[in-house]
Length: 252
Image 1 (tube, one colour):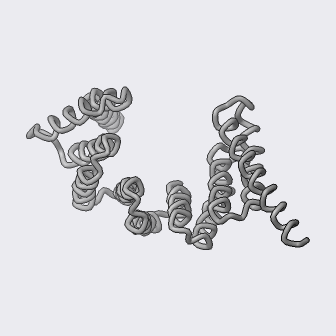
Image 2: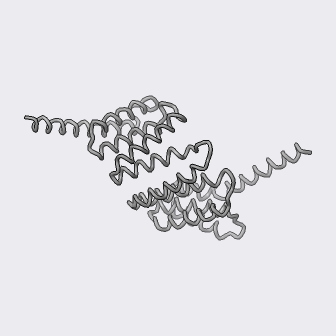
Image 3: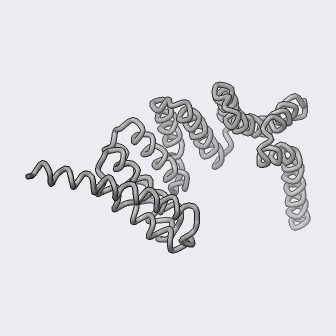
């Protein structure tokens, strides 16, 4: 009897997941085809259905937030994410709500970053971190939040804080990722960009070269990431050469 109940439970769950995927798949396809107005209309129509569960409504608001972000309707996107957040807080699903709420705060932070409101973006990411800190073991999103915060501190020219959060991210990535992982290379590239903003071109060059070294273990030399980084390295080398030339002139 227990086997029959287990089999029925698995079948019911599978059917439920399939129905949920079918519900959103059309809007998702519109989104990935960059047909954002059609995607928006689809998710708005779903919200009008009386049979929509709270969980499905949260998914709709999340999708609308993403669509409106692409359409540069930033205030509308924030409103969508706030509605998603309200539902998630109401649901309180064990072992799921915390990470979903953290993702919601991260999404709001990214919208604020696009609006160049870096202070508010940082605040949302700090709130995401608060929810992730309650998850044991450390959630893999934590490293992403650290990196986002570091990049935001670079934008606000708080370079010491930026470096602190980059180091936190590297520590987690070192525990969880392979040495040649693309994300690890991106972190080094972002640190290089931070030092470039700081006009510390020697340190910037060191980190860009490290990013290049890591990426070349996984990517071909003609990959767009490598080619873009090569141009950046050339720019930094030029800046560094000009800086050294000025120092020689001043010394004489």
